Image 1 (tube, rainbow, N blue to C red):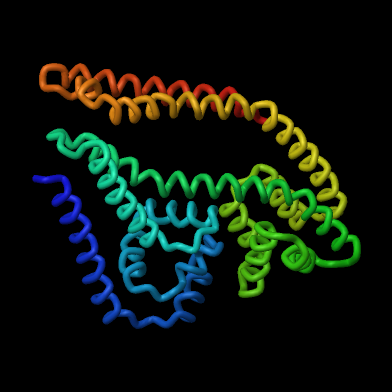
Image 2: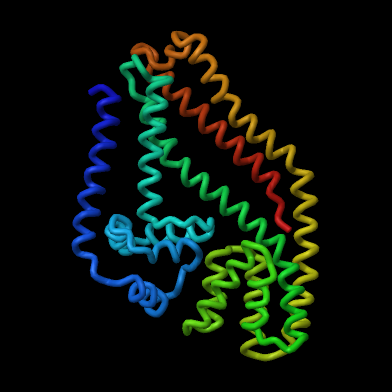
Length: 327
């Protein structure tokens, strides 16, 4: 079958299935938005974040697929990943984006590389690459948001310590942080305050915060607050000491990042160089590159490409591990 027809049939089939699912779910949707939101908070721990608020919206297609994703660990993990990236998407909506990205990338790979070639290997490769592109984007957002949160954590602790010394309670100090600090730390502590106000315990709210922000520094802060609440002690003094430790750790991490940036960019450039060279050769001298896929040399050519890809990935992984220094 022509790859173009296959891609069009696949895209049309997915769109038709989602349309039917949306119509059926729209007719069967009974619960109101308020009931659903309160039920999510009171029946199980909140995964929180903008993604949680977005999941509470009445979207028939998303609800239809989400109800099936909730029965699997995959759905919960995807919800947690979206919450950590602060993306206002439901897991079902993100899966649809992955499928659209895969179909579009497969078509682009076929149009520029595989058109006129009886072997659809580049179309398949484009479909796989398209599936991973949204996940790579989410991982990038997670890393940027986590870095911004870690950089703001020391200032947040100083503000919270000043509030505790002025006579604020823990919740009032967190509310002051949510008002005075910039995002993302203000958004996260505002969610903790809101969760406590609707009936969750402080420990549950902090656990949800740690689930959204998997930061070792935040884990240290949450542990100190939980221990102080159980055994007592001067929380302001404890947080002041932790603030100094975190500030020094952030400073050292910044220096390490500057010193290892050359290694990181070299690793990325060396990993991309074979792909760039292969693309240029494919455009300039396609018969030369087709030697990998000729019937006489197809098996050896595919094996060579697989081995080369594994070696490139192994080299990139080793270079990133060398530059990843724990503090």
